[in-house]
Image 1 (spheres, rainbow, N blue to C red):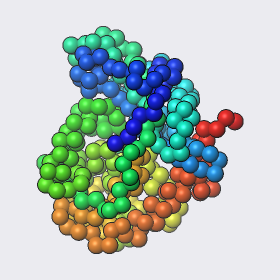
Image 2: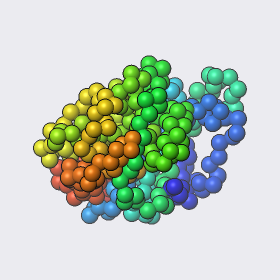
Image 3: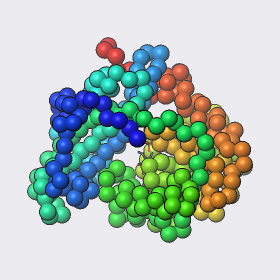
Length: 303
Ligand code: PMP
């Protein structure tokens, strides 16, 4: 659970978060057309800094384009809004959430007003970070929509309903989360995270095309390259997932969560050595302690 900071940015102005409301009959909740993105900020030696903020904003703009939401703000304006809400939150660590949505009351499928409203909010996680490896379920019949039916690159509210139901099934049988297959039956991603496996010293993750291009996924691949760990972005059959030596999920909000069991099979010694190495170096990069990845951090302090 994350608590929204008292002030958020709504269409260019800082307003009390409690004043930002969507009408019940709006297109966004009724049709699931809201798009969003979630970034993070961290304490660094140069003060609080946003992590890979331009990539998050670029992905947010792409989600809006895919769904057909017209935004009145460009990348620079949305980065500035993130800086403003992060400053206003007065915290060292947290999340930034950009949302765009049709507010018009609209019973039809296509909204008459193409102009979207835009909100940017800082959110402070309330739960302590998880310390035990996750138990993951992978069901042969819990699959993502085909990319030509629903682009996996759009972070749209409606896209999370199927994955949410799959997670419910996983939790009901005693697992912590689910990894969905793609429409062809190969490993895709978790509801809100990408997935990695380590087999015989090789780091493997599903190739782009049928998954969200995760920014943490990209960061882990860059860190693995810097560490000299062999890596492959490729098709991963379900059988490979259940026989891996190590596995972990990546998402802005964790950012790297070790997996301790897949479909009831224990991954002995989780988190394994490669998972630990990647996790530690990624954490250093997020906190501005990696010269090589310094460009990933955008300090929020006044120039
Ligand atoms: N896949 C999906 C479907 C997601 O919603 C997320 C969270 N944004 C991710 C993967 C991980 O992406 P990121 O590392 O950019 O947070």
